[in-house]
Length: 139
Length: 409
Image (tube, rainbow over all chains, first blue to last red; front, side, top):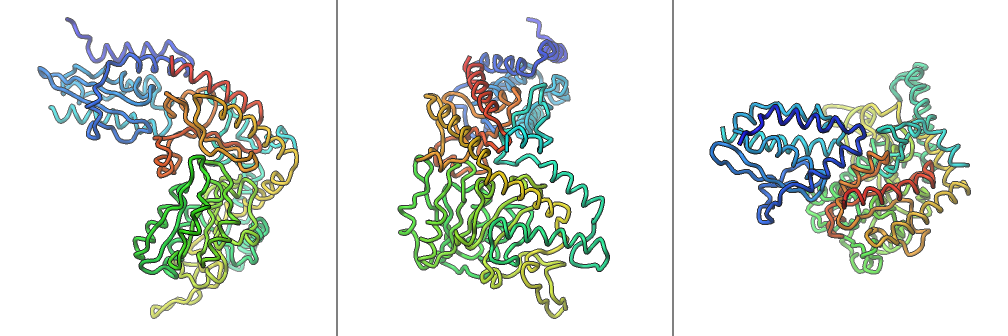
């Protein structure tokens, strides 16, 4: 199965977001992403998987298989769940080197960073940090 | 005064966010500024910008007069017996830290007790915790009931000769209920326990008469009552302030400085070390003037009452909304509504409502113990000022319903 490159996936997301002019519509899209995130086991909602710095709670788990990192996540808030879902769709199944070498710039490009409250922006920054840290640990 | 006329006095209210008319419902966090306040601060910067109390030149004299006139305005506003009892600070947090720290040094010994209520925000908990740890004192908690009322019935039983001070909010920033401060002070004083009242919200909604209430300390911020930010007040009874050591050392607060020892300035300068916020403090004059006006204006009171009744009805009657701070009578409630919606995260709602132009607060609201008390991770809060309209309240309810639908799918 051909897996799209990191760049291709990011470009597709930026394009998806550009369709929505209204911020409310972009949020509806995030809510939808949140709803479609695959189920996360209750027993993995542990403190060591909890990402600090968010108003809502976000758990991120990772697994390395055949040199690729696979992420799963959950949140008690649906929009946050949409955001982490977005990040997972880009970075899950990539190699540690790919993730660690990425600048995560597409987040700024789709305007997410500017349109989240500081606490939320911190949350987003914390999510990115955690993904990057996991990648670096697996280099 | 009509609400439309009041709105004209606050330039920030006419802005748009995300192309939508701003509905500012986060007044309990900070109010918008009066145009008169913004202009006043500018005028001071362009004119009498000089350090106060020191130089003999014209600018310094004018700046000092502006600053000291404000002390008189504050004295009048809270009806303090004397101007020496008004200390300028950077805000409520600074005021309470000063009071806790210096009261502790003067009056708290190991084994003594300090009481705070369960509904305090962090600014009226942590300074007391720090002081208790330092002085070997015990911090006790006066609980609230399920509706958010202070458990007045058990207060007397909690007090003993060890109880030195009780710190309580006049109105909780989460519950929006007026606490029976006069009664609390009476009960505490009968047992020899002093009382600090946190007026961060209370000063805005009805104000205070510190002599009638009899409280020993009263703290509030300017920025919640329409002034510039970075200004606050601590009122303290003279006999207590005089026995308390200074908080910070520096210029202004001294009498004579020798390497062999320093003597301190009399009140209130003893507690005002260093260069004061001389451009912001005088903005309390127009701010408190406006607050006095709206507090006594019958039309404003009526408008506010209608909004309170409307939101109490809408939020109180919705089966999927849990309202915190349920009043026994509407007179007890200020226009501040904290709530949770079943099955929807407070942060999601706040984000969606923000995109609809409504500024609300979400989260723990600087009162984590109270969140624990009610078993929630956070709440949503709509807090309303005299410049908010019934149309805005109706729009908020409409948007809340729409946001709920969006989030529930």
